[in-house]
Amino acid sequence: MEIKSAGIVLKPGAPELRDLYKTIRKSFEKEGIKTFLDLASAQMIKEKGTPFDEMCRQSDILVSVGGDGTLISVVRRSYEYHKPVLGINVGTLGFLTDIYPDDLESFLKKLKKDEFRIDERMMIELSILGKREKIVAFNDVVFTRPAVSKMIEIDVCNAQDEKLINSYYGDGLIVSSPTGSTAYNLSAGGPVVYPLTNAFIFTPICPHSLTQRPLVLPGEFELEIRTKSKSALLIVDGQDMYEFTPQDTVLLKKAKVGARLIHRRERNYFDVLREKLKWGR
Image (cartoon, rainbow, N blue to C red):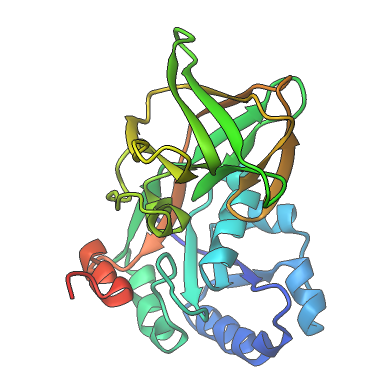
C-alpha cells in the first residue's frame, strides 16, 4: 500500500494539541506524505483546514490524535470511505491507539516501507425500523433505562426465524463487538473476546434475575430487539443516543465491512492486555 497523503483529526476540545499537531505534520511531510487537517480541528487550533468528507476523499489514510474515543469517532464518521485509521495516543488507556508521539517518526519510516499491518475489526450495523437510517457502532450498542428509578425489559429475537433468544429485565443490555469487549462490556462482567473474532457479546446490566449471564453469538446472526417498557434509550459507542418505544424494532447485524486499523507489525494483543489491564497479575 503506497501512502502519499494523510488526513489528521485532533481530539475535540483540546487546543493544547496545536504544537503537537505541527510536530506530527512535519514528521509526515519529512517522509513525503502530504497532510490535511480536519476543518473542526483546524478551527480549534486556529489553522487552515479541510472539510471532513473532502479530507477523507483526498487521504490514503486517516490519523486520529487523541485517545480511543477520538479514534472511534473518526472510524464511525469515515465509515463510508473505508480508509485505514492510525491512532496516535495522547489519551490515558489507549487500547486502540498504540503509537505514541515519541514513536511516530520511527513508525513512519516503517509505514513508507510497508512494514505495518492493517487489522479489520468487526463493526455493528443497526437501524430503528421506519425511523432511522443505518447507524454503525465500533464498540457497543447499549439498551438502557431512561430513568435511574426504573428497570427496562428487552426482548432479543433471531431475525431469520423471529424466535425469541432471551428476555432481559434490569438496568439494560450491552451488545458489544469483539473490540468493544474490553470496554463497558468488561466492566459489566462480560468476557474478553479476541478482537479479530466475528461475534456479538450480549451482557446484561445489573439483571433482576441472577441466572442471566453473558452470551456470545456468531456474527452471522441478524437480531431484532424490542422493549416492553414505556420507553428506553439506545446509546451507540457512548457518543450518540436515540429513544425507542414498544412500537419500535431495532434491527442489528454485522456491518458489511469492518474498521481498518493501522498497527505496528509486532503489536501483540495479549501484550496489550498485560500492559493496560495488568492481565494475569
